Image (cartoon, rainbow, N blue to C red; front, side, top):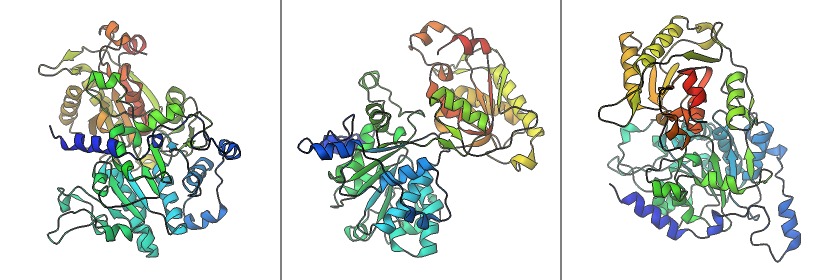
Length: 467
């Protein structure tokens, strides 16, 4: 086991400048303003307003009202000391685009701003460069829009996308290196993963804004790595979906102590629903209206609306169920489960959809058009084998833990467990029944689909096991 991450997490906790940065009050205006009742009242009634002049900076992008509210919160005057700003929303509500547009406005309008943008994964960090800042910098040649993308020094250069490489600090031997103080002084935007951001702590860099995207996926101690550079005036923004997969914690003791809850989720539970620093994005632009309605009712209290009209298959409903009981078996050398009959049923249904693929409305069939998701690695192996027998090689089959951030036109969900499984452990939450007992797994799986979600499983088991 590598002790370095644990040492860095401990250092981040010790170096945290102010505990109130991550332990805000339930109501705005109660922190640090006890001597000024007028200021307290102003903060309680705070409302962030969108400025029409910002629209000229993002002519090609149309933001909805909630997205404008998120931008306005990030653009609030720097002399206003605020608790962490939460930008919440499920996949497809435009969190990444909203953050990128807000940064574009901020960097151009405020020449003194210095921003650290951290993500949990390298792919998410690269997305900001490839899809947004690379295009904007080449279009305007404004040095404020030129990001500095920091990588782990041990990563090889040829594994990084060509569009991202020009923005990375690289030494004479073609290896990634840490940035210098001069590079940071002349840079408005630093993009890094949470793990790599620890290299900035010894460079006397003081950001005006720290933004953590994918904050719901990171352990709280991971998120603290970049907060050691914060000051009382640093604006902290956390973006993510508190109803998607939480960080994985394997210790029962750590889980009991609440260490399986991300910083974003914990602060989300502290804030009142009307808190001005809690912005809920509520329009989904990437999924069929029926899929959005299902996830909205099941996981988000009916707050999410569909924002785009996606075509449905002429034969299959956007929400489809295939009844299949089968027999659950346990892997010989693992604690996982598999269901051979269900794997064969899924392969047959995928083959059927492939034959009737509506190219005119869904586009050409390609890798990533269909995704098959299961909670168990043993079931993934068997589904892949069944698909190979039918010469279906362009279908992605993954564990649900590996599909966060991905999207497919159609998704098949393999439940595996059946009515013959003991219900007592599931009801006492002593055993892991995958989709039957963990709503976040189900939410993650369903929200991978754009136009079709097909669940394959035992209907009696679904109705009687878990919640």
